[in-house]
Length: 146
Image (tube, rainbow, N blue to C red; front, side, top):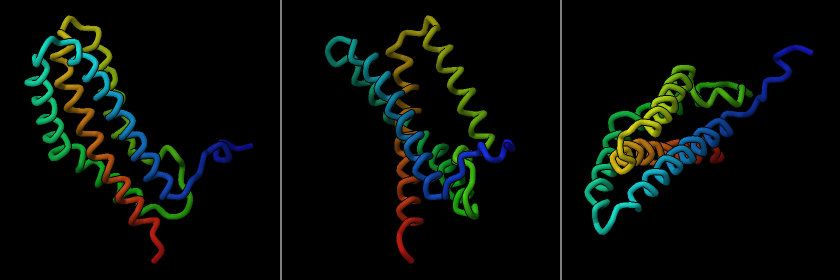
């Protein structure tokens, strides 16, 4: 039995779906953590921080995540035949995600107050969620009959 027979091969439409689900899931997770931290603030104290997080999310979407998503979609659409299910992200994206996850864990353990961390978490989470919509649009375009 060769190592190649263990490779979970799928069609590219599944890669687009896996990407969308991964980006949506991580975006929702980070945003939910941010919501929990902001909900602990009394009165309307969370409003300015939530607004800052939403503005950061729009910036992250516009200037970073949407471009990465589009590059991944182009790369996936150029693939032929069945490919490894883990190819929905490029190697560089996996490294960036690992680094960002490590930084996030370190920051949650830091003395930085959670409501301030919520701004960054909401910014990254919201940006990822918005960019995930590109994958679903790409899936719809690549799944429709021609």
